[in-house]
Amino acid sequence: MSENTKKIPLTDSAVEDVTGGNVQIVCNKNDHYCYGARTPDVRYEFQSKRAVDNFVTENYDYYGEAGIFQAMIDAGIITPMN
Image (cartoon, rainbow, N blue to C red; front, side):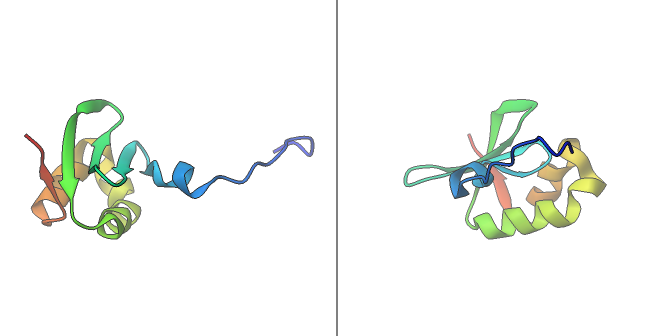
């Protein structure tokens, strides 16, 4: 990184939007779901944002975006939304 590069701290809401790779999380008063950047129309609901964050952090490199959602479904962390 260049010495002239200006670093800007991220807000909590900016950090919440991306948990790892291309996994996006929406977590507000009305909505709690996640989706992949490549498949934004396919959404998954969850009960624990922390569980999603932890699973993605620990397993994203292994599964990638293509497999991380199925792995979280298999682990009971998320469920597909209708």
